[in-house]
Image (tube, rainbow, N blue to C red; front, side, top):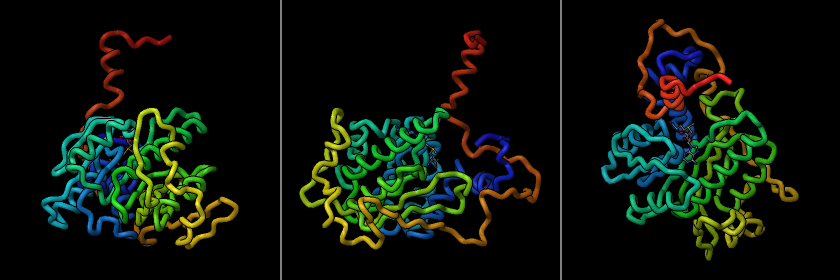
Length: 298
Ligand SMILES: C[S@@+](CC[C@H](N)C(=O)[O-])C[C@H]1O[C@@H](n2cnc3c(N)ncnc32)[C@H](O)[C@@H]1O
């Protein structure tokens, strides 16, 4: 979050700066927790695609300060480097690579996680179909990693974009979790397709042992997971019609709370300093190239 931005009248952007969160996304996780109590009884947490770290800040505050769990463990993973956060182990790695799973497991001493979240978003290309495809692949990678590390009964939360084929993902998730809800926190702009899948009660198929390997396809990975088997869906409280799943959609948050799409005049016109300076901003390389005279207009 820089010094100035065209977003400065966005109430959540200002609130994040005032309250010391590195990004406005912090409110999305806080509001999801208000609805689903996802932090309850949680000791080992994985925050995938975590930079700059506002979700990890929320988790650190919740587990160490509010719940006073000294032995809690939080692992944050991102392609980008992250400035340290109290009690959080930061791993700079790609969540789509199998090695990353082993790095996380090492931090937990081989114990499973209680909660995995992913707020991942790839750099957008502007080609809508391609962006949607890459985002879907990132969610699948997060899910594969999650199935290898989450304890039965655990929770998985991930950012999604509600594109055309999203019901396929709901169907697949419904075979793996007791309850799957698509939630839209109030701090997520109504004008954006962004939403979050909240998957509660992980229930892997009995004889399935998920294994992440470099040259394994997604299909091969989920072989044996029982996806597509009707007896795995008996618990569902929403209709499955000819293979299409109509997921539950829930707008979360207090209707009286501030609206992320509205413009608010700040009480006092004052400039707030950034909570955390960018660690590896993409413009750094461009500035270096400009200094060297390598940045030429063609
Ligand atoms: C919207 S940001 C996450 C914000 C974060 N939840 C917070 O609260 O500060 C999305 C992040 O996804 C990361 N990302 C995208 N693809 C990734 C990958 N394959 N492996 C790890 N991180 C990835 C990006 O580097 C970026 O930092």
